[in-house]
Image (cartoon, rainbow, N blue to C red; front, side):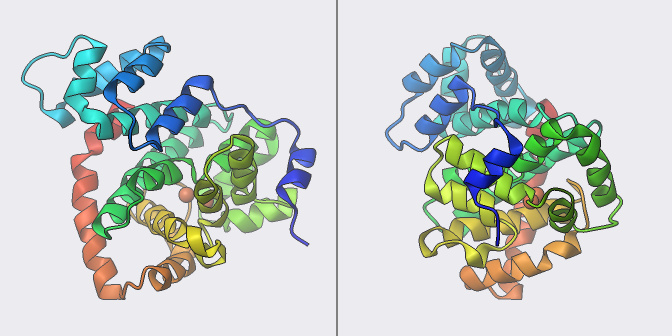
Amino acid sequence: MPITPHELIANLGDLPPLPKVATQVLRLAMDPAATAGDFHQVIAMDQALASQVLRISNSTAFGMMREVTTLTQAITTLGVSALKSVVIASSARNLYHRGAVGPQERLLWEHALVAAMASRAFAERLGLALAEEAFVGGLLHDIGKSVLGAKFPERYGPLLRLVHEEQGACLDLELEAFGFDHAMVGEALAIQWNLAPCLQAALRWHHEPHRAGRDHRRLAAVVALANHLALEQKVGLGDPSRLEDASRQAMDILTLDSGALASLKADIRTTLERDQTMIAEF
Ligand SMILES: [Fe+2]
Ligand SMILES: [Fe+2]
């Protein structure tokens, strides 16, 4: 019998709360009517976040001719869509850095960021109207790992090392060690944080997208493909060949043949290279 999210929380103890700013930003990100002014109001409450937004607006990725010095300027420069991504990424960064898993922590974070950018790119290129959800889903898909790292540093650090050295499948090792895996922890967290049901499903099923509910299957599939692509790009922990089955399920859900997927991936790799600076900025 698989463990339920409630039993999981009973086993794990308290889960980290979502920071207030992140909650508001996530809500704004899901709201198509959200304006630059709404974001300004939220971002201005968090000094660290505000300076990160400024730093990113001035990064070479945006090729600005003049230095951006105020938050208002930064918001207009980035545009609401890029701004959402920067702010969500910045909030998620703090969540990922909460785990105490040492050198793997940076790799987990870069993996999350690349998966987020790739998820959004997949959603856009496939003409799915869920680009923003895809970005957030990609960004948070492995957040369960950071929770496990924070809760069980002595056991989870060495486990991740094994995964990194490609000596085992992450989910199997987790199930063996804890009786649950990072996808289940991610779902429990998403429920506690009141994230949209499609995001709960994406976190839960990013390794088995065909098991997601019918309405959420495409988002889970996009995140699964992005997760695989990130590992193929050597950003993250583990052997990409272990994600082939997840990718096959995703192709089935999105009705992609291997030729179509290959050209889509080539395209997205180019986008990711262009966005490298954004990764470096974090
Ligand atoms: Fe995962
Ligand atoms: Fe992943």
